[in-house]
Image (cartoon, rainbow, N blue to C red; front, side, top):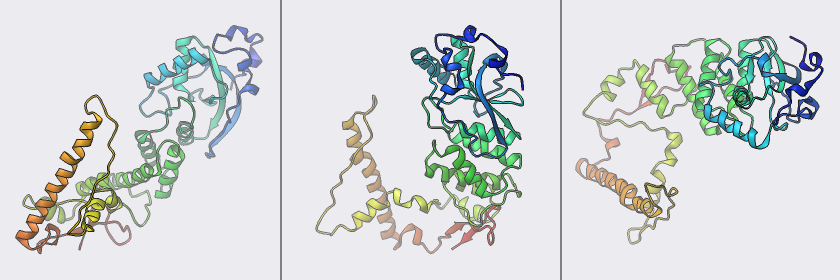
Length: 349
């Protein structure tokens, strides 16, 4: 590691610019907490003012899609208005390589404004995996103008961890998603991503990652389950053009139309049910009035039509479609110990 700029440059005034004064070059004035995020293999060495020309951006290590030019412009304009804010995160630099671990957008914004240096924190990373984990975790900070990790960032990170053998069990998948997405994605979304990553492992034929005994499914993983399934149920039932098949994720059952139908079923024969509803905010395409009308003319009308068809079916056949004597219901395999989840086994009812 080369000597710091404070050790090699006697006069810092040549690096002062309208957005970064000499006082800001003093690390004792930086108030944002420096952290290794509790990641093994990360050693924080020091924090000090450094020059952009002495570090390497690469392709923005912590960003799956690289640098977002809109974000660069946003940061540039904020600096033009307010200057550099010492209460905001510093840029992390890999001491071994000089790579910018996180701060690629600030690097580009500063280049537009002619800002020669920034607040740097130098760290040593024991492996590519520890460095990548740190970059992703730092991108998960709840700070002004932060581009938090989205679903694609999380998915790419988990797949990378699996590919390099750093993620070897489902619990690590869950822990890693929590580490890099706990501020940016809801627990519901995180849970869905766990399901999708488990499905990805099945689809890739990976047998090195140990999964929990039971697994859950959702609409997306159901399609993947069917695509990889070798169960005769697929050809005999799902691919039969003469019958209908419908997948139900029971975790979402309550959010469907079931509550409305359940309440309607409670209505006495000599009474009725009033509907109170709210709609989405108006847009250029649909006014509030149009949105409200569509509740009854479209949404409820479609439900009524569907119910009428089900009633006609019951009158004709003496039962509901799912009670027909020829039905072949099945459950998706979920028990890794007693069922073949990876081969897409269907458990007949």
